[in-house]
Amino acid sequence: MNDSYPYRNFGFRNNLDKVKRSRQIISVFVKFGLDYLFEASRVNFLSKLRKRRKVYHKLSTAERLRLAFEELGPTFIKFGQILSTRPDFLPAEYIRELEKLQDQVLPMETPLVRQCIEKELKHTLEELFLDFDQSPVASASLSQVHKAVLQNGDTVALKIQRPDIHKTIETDLSILESFAEILEKRLRNSSLYHPTAIVAELKKTIRKELDFMNEAHNFEKFRKNFKNVDYIQVPKVYWQFTTEKLLTMEFIEGVKITEITQEKYEHRYEPKKVADRAAKALLKQILIDGFFHADPHPGNLFIQPPATIVMLDVGMTGHLDEESIITIARILRAVNEKDSNHVIKGLQELGIVVKETDKRQLRHDLTELIEMYADRPFRTISLNRMNQQLLEIMARHDMALPSNLVMMLRAMSIAESIGQQLEPDFDMFAIVEPFVKRIYLKLYSPKSFRKRSMNVMDESIELIEHFPQNISDLLGKLKEGQFEIKLEHQNLENLQDEMKSSSNRISASLIIAALIVGSSLILQQRIGPLISDISILGVIGYLLAGIMGLGLLLTIFKTRRKK
Image 1 (cartoon, rainbow, N blue to C red):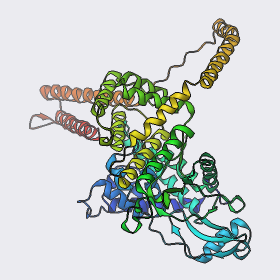
Image 2 (cartoon, one colour):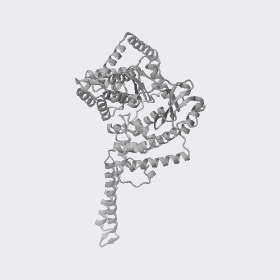
Image 3 (cartoon, helix red, strand yellow):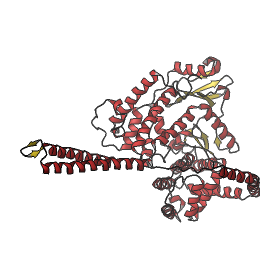
Image 4 (cartoon, one colour):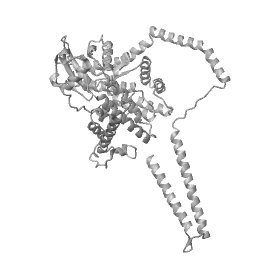
């Protein structure tokens, strides 16, 4: 398709658009007092703006960032909403603020909506539908939803992607990548947050959300996984009316999950049962199916009387393989037994500990966290707070958490928050426990044991079969002198820069010292030309030494300030 992404080979017009958009982004950041991100950088010339008076100085940095995203429009609002789902990328106060971002976009005009639908489905609106509601049910930054009736009488919801949104987002992503590279260089001594990694993850997530076929397949997976659960409803997808930019699904009415406690719904819904079922549904997705809704906020969960849950907007999902699920269960058991060594082992098996870390201090921090919550009634423990403390420990020890595990922790925190809104005595841990027991029963079942035994046997046989050939290949390389050991340095660039800087300073110091000594000798010997019996060459030498010394001191102070 001609208008599909990614947009890579920007022509002159696109580059001009990028420059204009870059200036706009920087201008907005300057307006909200976030210009320190661009000071002393190569992008500063784009703004051509004098710094404005900080009228937002009373607001926190997180609040100013949210306001900047809102002013920059739909794509940045979407970026902020995605970032709010990643507590491993930003501090907690930023996450809380970005969660407040709301889509404030005007709905598309009816002629444009008609044009989008007809372009995707190659038929007129009248040929496709018996009835089409011109007023959108919902309107967001990437798409809007309309209600319609198919020719066979089925009522459907049409999720229509905004035209040219691909191009807009790709332009903004390209600009963000450039900014992230510059910011990363300025933060190179900080190991907590990595702008380029954040933008890369952002790009991957938003491209998935832009492909409505991906969301359609997610709906199908959830329908299959919940086919035997009568209290969960997942809309049916109408594949013949679905494309990458248009999703047609069953229209299901309901009330937002957090609104069922309102007085007007008092006798229609059962909040306690809804809270219990929502938590169980999520834990089934995570610990049984290994495929879960990564953004189950209240707007994506509708309720039908008295306690039926409707899943909506499943563009963002997470995956866990069987080994990861088993490892998570082992970590939970180790936490219960206050065994920090096995917690660390489990984290390593999940691929979390990716760099050398002070394991003794890590063990101490984890033990302290476990002891903080040990022997406390489950209902007094905040899963959200505990997750945040775990992420803080991992950040302190320069540990990277895989994105799916972050999404899992956040989804469980949201489920706990919703449950507590619906039922004050809601206990997430009490609901988790039976699922962990179920995993262990499955793990040690005869069928599972037989499967693992067969895998071990297959791997052992393969190892034995290839062992002689591997030894022969190794000896052959040694004999021919082809055996190589590759050493890869990590983070030595800073040391190299420091050594170069130190060498330059030492060289400058030696030159200054030589000038001072030489000038002193010239003055002592009264080498001409002379003024009032004072050597002019000696004075010039002292002046040069003074200027160079002052320049060296300024350079040293400037370097220290940057650090």
